[in-house]
Length: 430
View 1 (cartoon, rainbow, N blue to C red):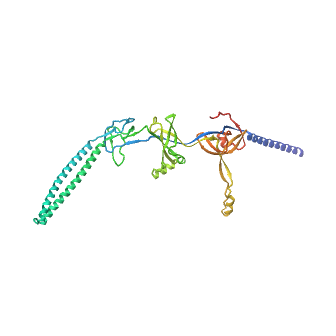
View 2: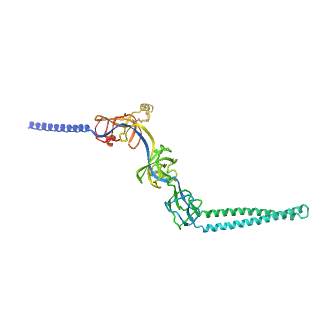
View 3: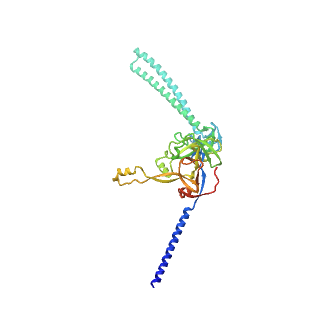
């Protein structure tokens, strides 16, 4: 009975050993095949190109010159001889406000002024008579023909007449100023166009009452703009605004003109961010919701086609270079590497009581993958400026070498040094 049991144990042992060998062999076979399976990639040669780096920003079109028409006097609009979109010349009548009250005020001021002039003439006559009486009285007093009391009485009357004359003169000046103000108020019932331009917005109608004041803006009646001089106002982030300068060339694209491109130049750069001019509470709320932006104004070269408020995308050319080595932007990726800090040992010896050990210093390396037969070779590079498609390579590559350009997952995750690759057949870019 013992011998059959031993035989069965041996058989089970051999069977388990065979299964283990088969499983291990299959695992290693699969692992070997997976390691040797090449990664499909796209490639392109390193060439020389001209590269222009741009800052992209969005905004809206505005007229360079725009005037808001507000009345300086209150009243009812009795005439509005312009329409929205109408072209006007400087000096054209835009609005007439009912003038009845201002005519009455002018006539009243005129009457007051004429009365003050008459009062001045009367005061002058009384002064002249009082001065003549004083001179006669003074002569009699010197000859001791009248008493001192009579002399002082006449002298006082002359002084009073002189003061009355001077007061009448001031009254004339005051009445004249009131008349001039009344005339000016009357003239403001007619509003003339301050510039040549187009009525881009009309907010009031004939018959409406408007409020006017010289201390603050009154009712907004209309806006006039010069549409032959337009500018784009775009918001640029704080990281990019430092590279923008007045005079830089700009390429513009408008949603309203998809098949056209426009040009311009940077004309003005804001010194403060968009939130800096707000109140503290508003600026805090705005900054918590969005990144800090600076307004950049771009003078548009083309004089036709745009309307105020159209959306615009600006490509501001900040830097450019010619005839440099370049590769597609997607070819360049970054991989972290660890380098031991040279001062690590010294710091540990100098301060052993701190109990802190300085770890390895992490660095990021810009790399591309070169094609070497059926393998990808990792190559460190120094990059420069870039445009939408290509990036400048300052060092690390030579013209004519072939680099991996795709796919994204292959470049950024899958490929390592000496990885097997298989090149896809793709059309060459111009």
